[in-house]
Length: 143
Image (tube, rainbow, N blue to C red):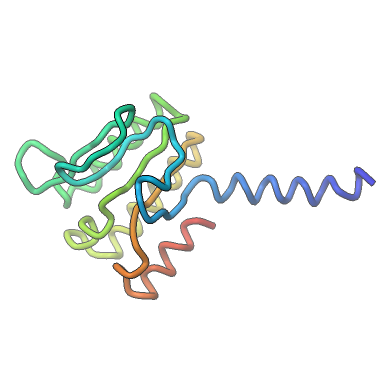
């Protein structure tokens, strides 16, 4: 009996862990993490144990067009703290400044590094903010 159930249970485990690397959520409240690094806008409220990396066109912050620098910061954070979650809380803002194509490439890279280092990525957005085709592409990142 166990020999019959083992492949089924193994498949369920693989499916569960695979979908845990990237998740789309509607709010920061939907994220069950104790510690996280949030890529977000200036003035954003985050839980006390979370770190906010501010993205703004204002001098002194990561610029919204500097996806390569944001990615370098995410990779460094995952290398130092592989179990910490990464939260992208301003994807619409990043898409506005870079275009959707550049955003999806950036998110694919972030997801790949999260898989490599055992981290998790949460994308905070609303389906209504996107064209249906764009949201379908974002959803594919959860696979």
